[in-house]
Image 1: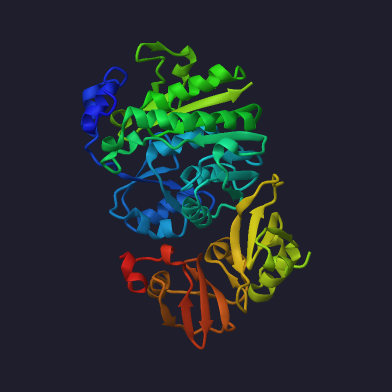
Image 2: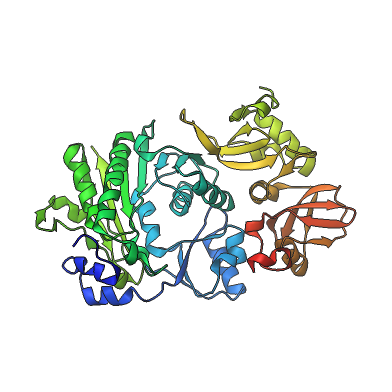
Amino acid sequence: MFFVRGMDFLDRYRDIVPDYEAFRAIQCQPLYSSARINTLKIKRDLLLEKLEADDVPFQIFGWYPLGLKLDVDSPGKLLENLLGYIHIQEEVSMVPPLALDPKPGETVLDLCASPGSKTTQISQMMENRGLVIANEPSLARVAPLRSNCERLGCLNVAITRYDGRNFPRGPFDRVLVDAPCSSEGRERRGPGVWARSSCKRSMDLQVLQIGLLKNALRLTKPGGVVVYSTCTYAPEENELVVQAVLEEKDEARLERICLPGLKECPGITQWNGRELKDELSHAARYYPHINDTGGFFVAKIIKN
Amino acid sequence: MSPKSSRIRNVFEPLDTSWVADLWYSRFGICKEAFSGYKFFRKAKSIWAISDASLPRLSYEAIGMRIMSCKGRPWKPTTCALQIFGKYATKNLMHLETASAMIFLEGASQAVESDCEPGYVVVFYREEVLGCGLYSHGKLVSQIPKERRMAGRGNEDLS
């Protein structure tokens, strides 16, 4: 079937998602609020003291000391958020910058940057040194990107507006491709995603995603890192994109992603009867029922 | 390069650090060393700051942070820039108590006694910079951007 609507669309993942019934059941449970501590503006311990003093209930992630679960109704209205001490960000959305692992002083490209959660996390990991080029083709989406960078005190970020497939100039030490996708992993944040999902939509996005990832590899220095991520489960937008680029360019390999404390499932190596590259198992799939998060796919590619 | 030259052209033009540092020293008494390690640019009537790194030849939408506007007289610092550089201010700054700080964060105006010179001031609360205020004749007008205000009387629409 080409257009399957609603939750039944999930059934196409029955054979690839472990404990499928739990996966399906958790889609209806809303996600808790979470935030990242912005060390560009405040030390972690001082921020935690402030939250305690202001009676804000929080819990630190088990796998990332700068990640917090917040038990408040409007975390965006917290003084700590308005002053840029924290940034409201979904838990697994903090994974791609950690996989990218940027270092102070490097030159990094975030090819699909807005609204800038990952851009600002990269900037913070680089301690405001070096350069982050945050690319966002849509003018309307540049405003929130700029606003977040400024609120969080990012001083090493410059914004460009190229079509990512034609971003003209490198080379970069690291490139993040957090690609436009069907966003199936966001269902717990804003229900209704499944009604928009279809295989055709995924195939249309795949063309764009392959174009973005190809150009990202072209723009990366030899030995440099490209991280490809989406917040969807569709293999057409994940493993098949990485496979297509690796097949065409025999100049890159996948590195395993492992963050202690956060359980990932391996990327799939078979889909709809088609065998895929074995090394795709080095990519990471994050499912909502396994860590009680949203859904994400992350692949770390090293250019030879 | 003259700081005036880019006013007619919508492009980023490099600025001397000393031109920026002199202005901030003269209004806020911020030492000039606070501005070393950054590059400055002017685009139309805005001044931008970015960490000192070589910029590839690209067409930029933004270069670092917009730190000041020269649209009016006197020049106006942005709240986000004061949150970075304002902590070094030695004059034209004021500390607010809790109730006044909340009014300021709501974006409202209030009567404040201060010996600041009329004009833009750095507003502190509990040793932290909240942002930019406009002070004159015993009145402090909050310059906190609308999207960063706390819900309250200054922006009922967001509450």
